[in-house]
Image 1 (cartoon, rainbow, N blue to C red):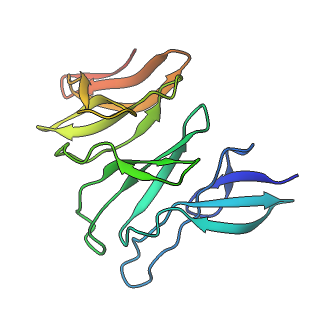
Image 2 (image 1 turned 90 degrees about the horizontal axis):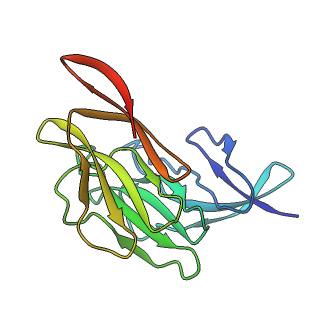
Image 3 (image 1 turned 180 degrees about the horizontal axis):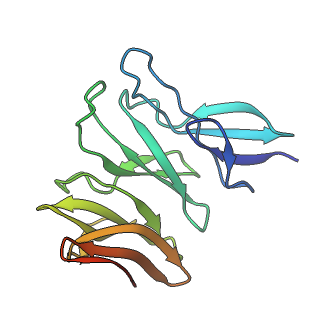
Length: 178
């Protein structure tokens, strides 16, 4: 029985089940190029890695699998060797391998992100006008919508049908919001 695994930058398996995988490939010259790969794990040995983002020569990473298993969302940059390039939120449809952007027209870095439980949208943080705000974007497409813009949104998590995050500002300590 083969399982598919997510591995982090140090190749430590996490996640598990039949959900997919990630394995970095670092370019020694720029030390920033990573690709999203599917790895089949049998007995702890990774075999048959398939690069899902070979068309992009720049950074691809931080993959998260949708709860229904149909999608892989990840962050990507377009310019290889340019560490200040904007991070975009991308989607891979697992059945076809089709890759498409979700935030191409959004003029800010995508930070942390999470799937909603129904796999129909993602919530993500982004620094906009000096505030780390919370946004939501639909898998079906469309512009990201602001969910919260009140200060610094960090520690993003989804539990059940709710999104939780720590909200802070210079004039008060972080509080948990939902």
